[in-house]
Image 1: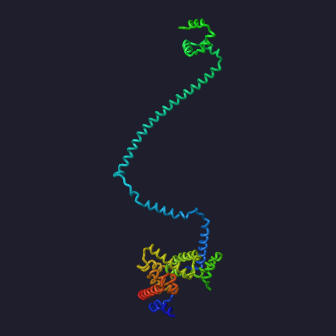
Image 2 (image 1 turned 90 degrees about the horizontal axis):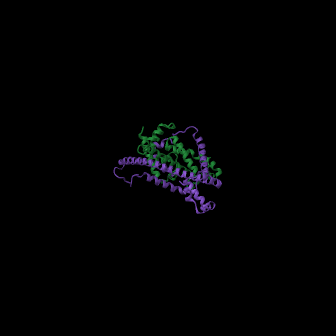
Image 3 (image 1 turned 180 degrees about the vertical axis):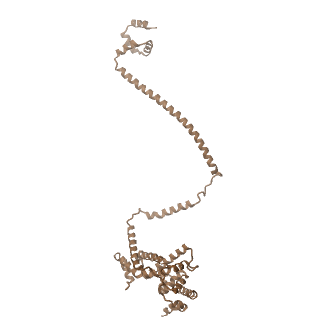
Length: 206
Length: 183
């Protein structure tokens, strides 16, 4: 009883308020509460299904353990990026005002060097071409002489002798004398007498 | 006949009857919680959003509810906190102090609300209530409209019974003064 009295004490202090009807002056759209239950039940079921399906999504092993570190690292990087980019670094006075001129000068020098190098490269290409031609020619000739040697070896010796007798000159004799070995000389002298040789020399000398 | 809270909790604990338990809980508490929120935020659409948020939180956390308090005080606590958070957020957005300028934004909402059926006296009372600080208005609503005991309000808000009595009496005096001195 005493508690109820205490609870009602305010009515003495506010008679106007106490005499007012304690009605609810607010209204709701028609059928609001009827649909509210259905809506809330649907939402709750959707929430339940959402949490169930979350387990179907796999995550890498140790993901959550690393996540905090990764987030902190990214935050640290963002903090660094927010710092004044020029803090701690200085440049010479008038650096930027002279920079463009410096760059243009260097561009000019590089253009001259490039021209010289182009000229030099032409010379190099020409020299390389000449050398290639020489080597190629030598190789070609060697190849040809090898072919001649192999061709000559197929010709009988007597035919070669007959040819040389018809077409030989004084220069050929000199060549033969210089290149004839003792063995070769002995072969010749066994077949020919000394008198024949002397007679031959007399007839063919200038 | 309304179902007991213990039955709701037992059914909710079993997965097979969880949805049924939630329906029972909605039937028992949805209107009470809606009006508790509506009297604070005035606007129906805001109240609708908040009541859904409240019951979704209840759905998610009811399994962890410890029976060291009554189920309805726990539900009221969630609803009261959602109201305070909503009103603080709204205050921040509008940069209008509900304390200093006597709830001008909510007053406008009240005046323009299509869902207000009260008479002139009721309108005066609601306008007077909007002059109170949020927590004091909460206490007044729970005592005056919901007829809750101070001990129950203390359990909901975490405030002592003595502080609640003092707060309510101050609110009553303010409202009486406004009712007597306004047109």
